[in-house]
Image 1 (cartoon, one colour):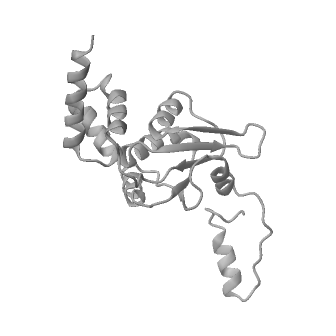
Image 2: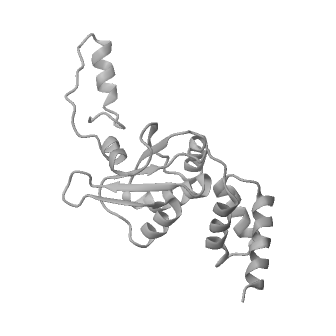
Image 3: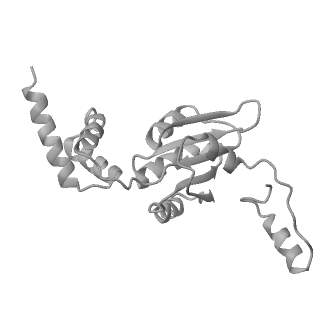
Amino acid sequence: MPLVSDPGYRLALAAIEHGHSVTVVPGPSSALAALAVAGLPTDRFLFAGFLPVRHGERISRIEELKGVPATLVLFEAPGRVAATLADLHTVLGARPAALARELTKKFEEVRRGTLESLASELAVKPPQGEIVLLVGPPQTCAVTDQTILTALQDQLGDRSLRDAADNVARALGVARRRVYDLGLALRRGLRGAP
């Protein structure tokens, strides 16, 4: 599948426009191979190709993808992957993700985690090779108080309650006031614990 995310589609289009037959011999597709091994929903997915290189344009494009009710499949260069994951986390929040690299090759690897954990991990040791990023779809089910409390506990270690509530509310797509109130109750409970 050499024309996926490749300017070679112009060649196929020119051949079609000139009346030539265009056929394909199915072969490896890193986008579909990564989707198959990521452990994310495969019933709906959107291949979004490469995100823009410039930070502001990349953030705008991610905002456009925010509400897509499907697994996102992206290509990224090794030198930009940590920054891209950080931007995805900033805009999309706490979503499950996977990074697949060098698929079907000797050093094939799939890393799974959240956008935030993968961004942190790859900022320390950037990967090499051909990379496919996959991002789970937005949560559509109701967020429970327990889910919020668990997320708050993760955030409160090195942040103020206000900052933690902002992060959790944005990540889970819930009202900030609800998160803050649960944080206050959590703090009262921790102070009252033996």
